[in-house]
Image: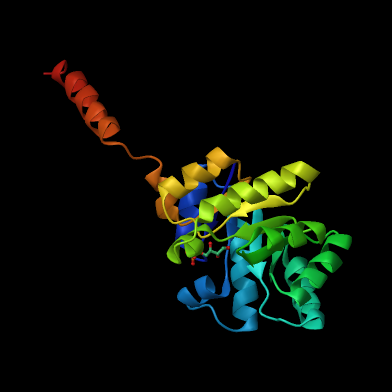
Length: 218
Ligand code: E4P
């Protein structure tokens, strides 16, 4: 299973990278805005900085919503670095654009996916990744994890190469359930990745080991 970090914060990206377990990064316009990154040149420069930290797929989302503009914006993003994945929303024009990009070897991430039907369309268009949003479904009292499982099953039935990138992963249990149902990738905040480290018995056990070791030095 691949771990992507879902942020545009360079410090957090660096920290996750330094742990040695990071496979890629996802961003979205809200995450860029949260870091105060606005304007074409600043946005492009920021993506380049992320690519310099992480040697893995970096999703950069288009703002355009019509076909011609999505193509123009996506091609410019893809030219930034070979690791850029053009993130395209699940809309009719987006699906057309994903087909265009996949025919030309440009990697894509189909985002804002909330149904298995949408995921099937993304796979048929040749998306590299599909991003079903687990947490946002849970937020409206719908089982986000059931959607991940359904997509994994459907893709498996037909051998689609599109990777299931579970997004909107909010906590450790989400991540572990994604692993159980066979998601290819999770993208989540740094706190979810570091959350995997924690267990009180690990902390108390280590404390005792160190104390016992130190007692021999007295
Ligand atoms: C996915 O690519 C999105 O950026 C993200 O996972 C959304 O997460 P949220 O629902 O916590 O905002």
